[in-house]
Length: 174
Image (cartoon, rainbow, N blue to C red; front, side, top):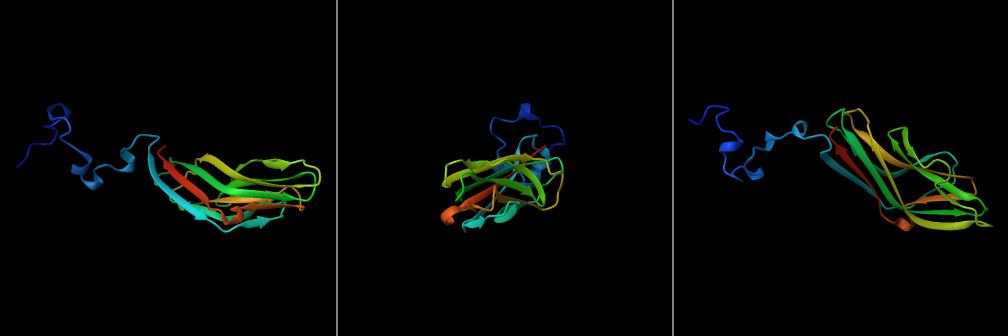
């Protein structure tokens, strides 16, 4: 039984006769979706305050791991967290950055958080970093927040006061 392949086309079907619920689970794969489609979303969270006075980038525990389905996929990385920068000197500041594994892919470069208040400052703020990355990989990739202080007289904080930080990774079809 049944009709030969190619006998029924869109013109012979009644409107709304084929719904998503009637499709076989494997009928549409990520390869069938157009460029720009969201293929998967992954989220990582962390809520323990971390601090550094290092003037070199140091890793935090705010991260997430994604395994792209294609080497042509792009990954939209969004990291948000409560931050605080405390310094006892007039020029207080530092940077937050996004790393893909051990590769620095987004830095604010040059005191993204900075104050020149005489005698120092305490700046609490919400930080959001975003980068559209092209990793060209189908292996598991870790995206992580790093931070560094402008001088050793500055303390950089992530997930300030144990506030929730999130890393959201969206795989976008290339």
